[in-house]
Image 1 (cartoon, rainbow, N blue to C red):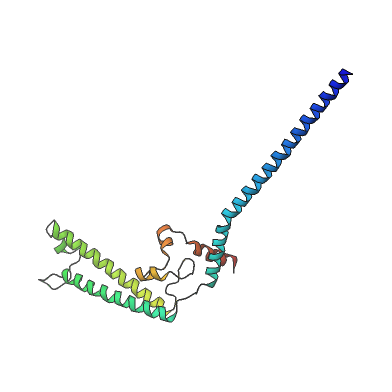
Image 2: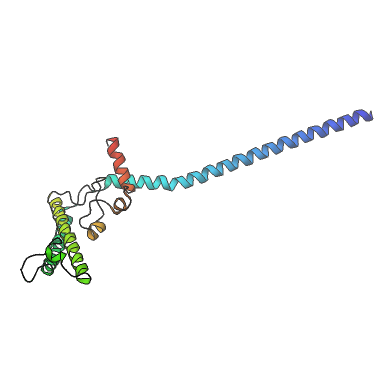
Length: 203
């Protein structure tokens, strides 16, 4: 009888151990599932703002005006004309400084005068003057191109993505034809990427 009682005790003990192990596995499974849910929620929370931000950008691109208003273009024209006048006045001053007072003719960099000039400060200053004059002439040409785009009502439209270049950039750089990000990195901005993807999709 004692052996039977001992056997029953052993069996009971084994069943109890198995139950405890099963309960432990259930507990671990529940804990693992809870952790998975938390991780999924955290990923969803992290991804949520990004998706939301992208959705907002898409909506902004869709609702954005395609051209600047006549009033905006008028203000841009006035600003560009003022810049053009100022630049031409500076060019006139530079041309006067490049004039040979003895002949009344403009001195070119390849002229005998330049070749026989004294080495030093005068030569360096004259080189700077030629450089500034060249840049000024180029800037006037760029301003003229901008005025032509205003006449065509294409001024301020990014040549890369077709969206409007921000007013702040055009006020700072009136000849700009792309956003600052594309100018600096060679890559379109976030809105530009969305606009380009819509173009490729044929929307």
